[in-house]
Image (cartoon, rainbow, N blue to C red; front, side, top):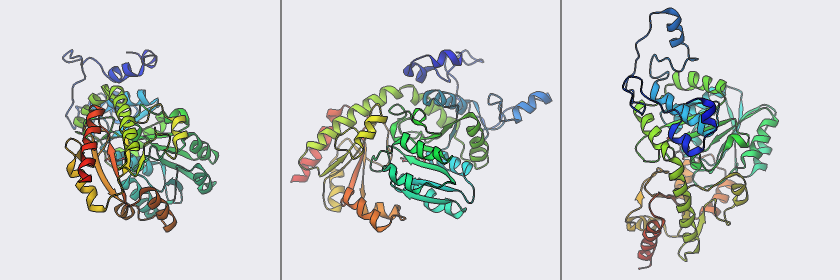
Length: 407
Ligand SMILES: Cc1ncc(COP(=O)(O)O)c(C=O)c1O
């Protein structure tokens, strides 16, 4: 299929066909899984030079550099997210670290989310400063805080939206305008959007990151990450961030994720529909103290979510206002929903985040920030990754567990 024809096709079609093809050896109508770490090298010097150069991503040498199965996945993702190119990695954190270590050097300044995925927060607040990179951590759901922290020499603005763990939304277009005003790049971790519910590049993002472990794979059986951006930037991330730092993906995981992507739009539709139904159910329930879901009118950034999201994905955060240990009793009462930390899987998953644990992870939060999050989270919150089961069954499981808490 020619690129031009692909670009004109609908999103669902591209999820099925982009990067797919007939296997030349067997005529199989699916790309095979190539589990090899090395490829026979040509002895013709001209051909050999192509293999050794990273400009020829269809000439293979060694799997840490690039190999067929991950490359097909990269082609599909670049097409779906509307990027010049993509490089995949062993995990979402592999993608984040590859991006930051490629882009930044000692003396650079970054503005980033004060609250985001724990390991990303560690990277921003602890590891980057060790290498002489200064990081200003602000509430990126408040665009004014980004504007106040930006400096003439700022190199990057890093946002996660919807943000882990509270579903907070950052205004992508607003952040892009501020970043571009000083020549900085806007990096968006779009993992919680599941790709289908927002298009960060259309809103001005320069780099988009996904943990493919979550919605893109969708079946809870593989880890992976992706960095998307211009062809030139991705070439640099591939060389500096992946090949030399080493977080390359296993072809096996790439193959799983490639298969998961086929059903992405169908799954995301169900995650979003279920997410809204579950959030509405929780919102009206007398035992529920608070609910955060970007599709609820009561969400603090509902207006921005409406502006930049087509749908609201499947992450719902809520509190029952119980004593610490009672929250775990509630989880014990759940019959179908699993007690597990990941998200974006077919199965519904829940975990309880006590505010004290949250503060242990987000050690850089100052007292005024802790006060703000204590007001939002109370003693703690449940993070529910709403799966693709029937919404009625998810609601009924939550409902019976809440009923048990009455007794
Ligand atoms: C928003 C976000 N980004 C990145 C990651 C890290 O992904 P991985 O576990 O694949 O490294 C996570 C994990 O939960 C996440 O929620």
